[in-house]
Image (cartoon, rainbow, N blue to C red):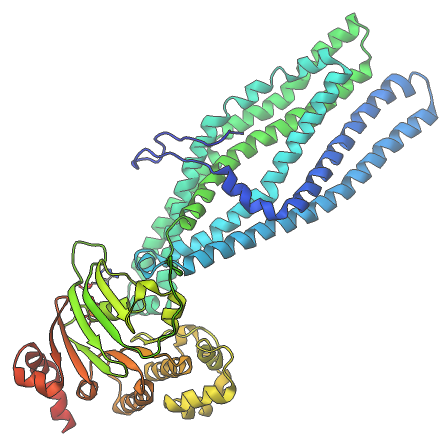
Length: 602
Ligand code: ATP
């Protein structure tokens, strides 16, 4: 195997020259918790390797001693020892297999949990910039791939190395001349390993990337939104050919992967057959000239075939496998190395929001592209106030609200909650006091009760019902045959948009936060649903500081303060009559968007 780290040259096709540092320590850290099991496995392997030396030795004794002495008793004992050693080896093998599973599966669990927990802590920007399918692929397929390496390959390496080591030592002790003859061709087997491994690593890497692509397409096209889109645009044929194309790419890569190093492995196989011939010749010559016993030559041939070249060939194959598996480790470590959100910034305090005052102080923010989403936003929302944000699409309203729970951090300025910079609070304490109802309500594929309890795991049934009643959804839920135990379907798609939204409101009511962020639905619901939601919002906003991205005239009229956002700036603020009288941006927006609503309403 390679030493400290590997350095690959230009092997990523067009990609820039990169250096792969294999962090053996880091890989080893995953094994550390299982050292007891590993030590026992090692013990089993050593015992099995030593036991494995016995049969060939006994064959030599049978040929050189039992048969010439015509001793049936000696023959019986020799054969019994062969059988006995085989049986004990089998028993050790079973124990070893069991322990291997414990180690392999344990490492898989640790790695998968570590990866998923790390991903849960990644900032939102990571998820908006990464395909879900790619993430899924790393968490499931990549980790599974490592399972093969851990449970199968590593044990196989140790077994074969120990087998070879014990055999070589035993052979030298027994007959050094014959031993020397047996190992002369070993270097020929080892030398071509590095280049083959490198090529395999490269192809394996491309294969993984192609799998990411397949997983992403599957995820996107088989999600409810995706499939609706495909059907509504009748793009099934296009999706078919796209999938076929990527599938073909993967097929070609897999074939390449299977073929890399085939010649090399085949030639090693040939050596396994040729090697004994050398020993037969040399051993035969020694038997003629130095009166070497024939049984010893027979035993040596057995040793080199089954305990030297055989394991050597396996090791060569495994080495290639291991190097290519490094591509998978690299991908997993790549994810683990990404910087997560800082949950507990240095010196952070876990303050409970008591009043709920929100202040933006010259906040500047860009999503990391060349456009500025917010350019110097300042405002204050007093505790308990309802602040409505209005403005054209893309003005920055959602961005403003997402900065409060620190889904993103501004590049300039400060955001204060109750006078504390949000950066000085632990994320847990900050987010505990903020409730968010977005346009796109997300529900887990679970029962209504479980979805509600996501906000408060220990909520009693009565609390659930009280929240649902306040959110105007209790009657509907109770009318369902299974009531609160009804499963809502993938993302809640078995419910109507209005029902989902009222459930989301009930969920936030259970959380009971000091601050509420509400993105009013733009999609128009029927007037009955609309009225039900409006009624649900009243208890939701009561006694809380609310930031509402307003799309309804009624919300705007009832707001304590209205902020007009344009091009990432707050251009006007005040109450409806004041702003209307000013005859500026708000008045224009009002005339364009809401006047008709007044007419319909009146
Ligand atoms: P709407 O009323 O249409 O929802 P909005 O006022 O809420 O619009 P924002 O969603 O805050 O607007 O977007 C402000 C700007 O930031 C837009 O130009 C948008 O294209 C950009 N933007 C929003 N989200 C991202 C993102 N994740 N990455 C990059 N740019 C983004």
